[in-house]
Image (cartoon, rainbow, N blue to C red; front, side, top):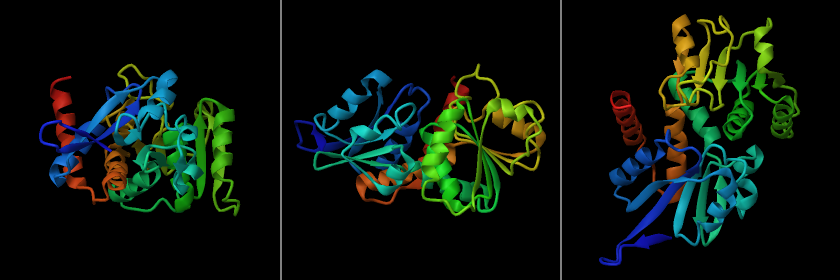
Length: 296
């Protein structure tokens, strides 16, 4: 599906992103750069959709001629029952970040899980297999990261959440077909971080805390050590209080830009059937972030 300019007969494929808020999102910058570099006649737009309007928005995609969308905070789980079909990863994870519209049917995918795994391997340089990992969050992004951690065979995993019941339910869902005992998982609240809890090899923030300047740091003073890898899925701003603390103590600090590129590349291929120009996508994001830094 596409729009016609009414003059030349040339059609432009419409893509976009559904989320709320979207001021921080650089997905339009990244995907429009990719379309331009590959010569694909398409445009990618932000669609600001509040939670109460998500059903209306999803149900309108076909009528509006949209070919595909990404889905971000807070809709990744909400859209699942609104779709016609889910791929195996999206069904297992219970969250969707990419929708493909084909023959008037809405098909949900999750490229976050593989996007995180690919980015971590590229940026850190080693596998997550056998590592002790702590994951913050229980939303759509956290579900995808948790699924990838289980797939990669982490040794010990602590999921830290605000609501214990929600975190426990998420872990139960994703461990349903992984009852071989190789992955040891515990669920804790953030208050437990103040106790003498074992430090992980890898600490991952999959919450939205850190998006805003006034957001608090999620960890008590002294929790991060120089031996850790600290990975925050937030990419805009490019640093967060958690990453600042990691840098202060000499830990490896990584933001979510690499994950954005890798999950975006997978979505691009689903929409277009073409290989994504990842270097172009990354460079467009770096230029945009540099511009934001100089013109906040």
